Length: 178
Image (cartoon, rainbow, N blue to C red; front, side):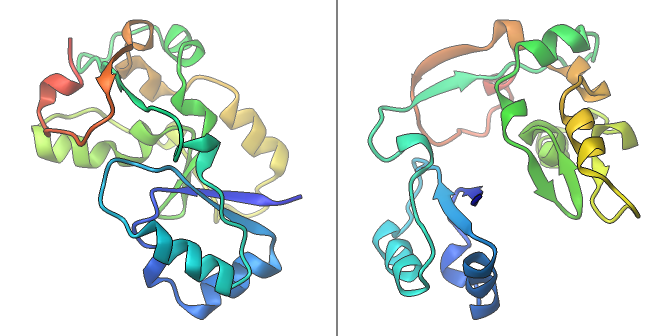
């Protein structure tokens, strides 16, 4: 059964032979999302072909008209975590970052949001799994991924909405708040 590496593709051209060898040996397929950023997709496809690694755009993202979704955050942290989790579309794609497995992108990268916008949305040890934990089991990972996190209190998923054409962020906090 193949493993999909879902990525924005930015670092793919910089990967060394060991990366591509590991992809081949472990049946890892490259499934980038075609974000509205400048990337030489022809070059990446050429590399994948040369390295005999499967390349497919994630969920047809090269053909579909993409729309922006305003993913509203609640800096007060008083949202209902269960409701936020149930309404979330981000918890369908785990993030591996710095040896930690996160169920959504917000939890994995909130440090950048906090720094850029002078916010203090907190991550706790219950918001991720350390993949280096001794004797970590598949069942533990599945159980972790299937339930709300403490961080879910910062999301207003019920208020998320499509807001038009998919484009590069203006890096304005109003893109994330009501």
